[in-house]
Length: 228
Image (cartoon, rainbow, N blue to C red; front, side, top):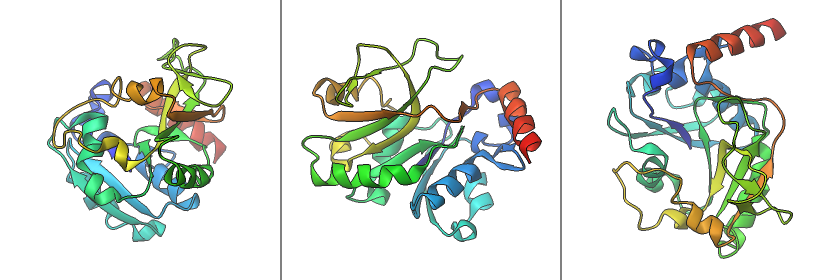
């Protein structure tokens, strides 16, 4: 699932007329970089939630055939349902197996293929693990981090805090009974599973950008074009 429903307030005025995931860097929309990464990692069925100016996203991306994937859409109102509500609302499209969730406004070199065996492990033993989160070194916009990783590879609230990289694998049972078509945040709700020791994690120290402002978008665009 690619999360693409948010308003992108910090990206205004660019997002006044264009949904944030369709803003371009390096010659293609942010969300296309995500689709290409997912396809390369073997994730072929992708659900995208849409909210603010959401009709533009399926109009631009279609059914996903261009990238060898199948795209389906989970529409939300313009003010969207937050991360937790967006995932819960899309459950009927996501199916019964553990699924990968990524934000549509990040740019990263993370290899999504490495999460395929993680998803299989969660499916095999959901009593032990219901979610797996990818953490990154703390960026400038989040210097204090979000959560820690212990020596056993379990997410904790205490310890040396790292940034949640907006990449995670979740078992659908985790969201059973949670409100749909309502706005609610993934955190702090997910901390119940964290405190029970049922959330694993890993640290990724490669290329990762949370593109939140026009200045960040322009800087990343210049960086990618310089590489080309």
